[in-house]
Length: 217
Image (cartoon, rainbow, N blue to C red):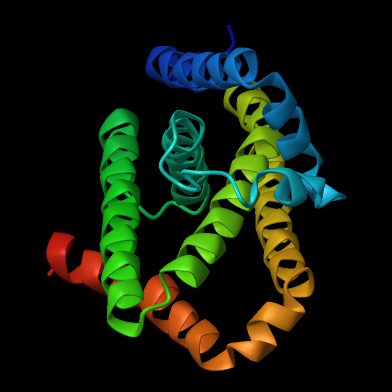
């Protein structure tokens, strides 16, 4: 008689609910702004989206952008969740771990927004700060759309190999979008190099340290 092997089953009900929320938000944005949504998807190989919407008013605080902030926050939290599980970095239960990561991500976004607003006022660079924030949000929104199908597949095939592939693809895609952001705005960046360095240090590095101090220490 063969030995009975215990099968460990982890419910994916909560993941399904989270993914449905993300998909619903994307569908809402696509129905509400079909052309804008379509152009956003082409950022991987075209910058026509910026030509059409970089002078919109308001540039950042719109329903379309706010929805994508929520979508990206959830998507990046799911990616970090996959990475933590993949490398065994936490002993928390699945859902507690995810919401803990989500709190970190939202805290980072809030801190970054506040710092950006204050620095823009201090150095009188409101337009530049808004433009760079718009660029980053646009690329991250496009990233969320592109990586979501891989995330969905990952959660339902339970493959460590695919999780590793997903993490690698996500990392490469984020790096590619960062390079595009620099490449497509060379003149602006080099003409305001001081502010760009300030932007990198204050709005990309400092928020991590502040969130770490607030939530961990």
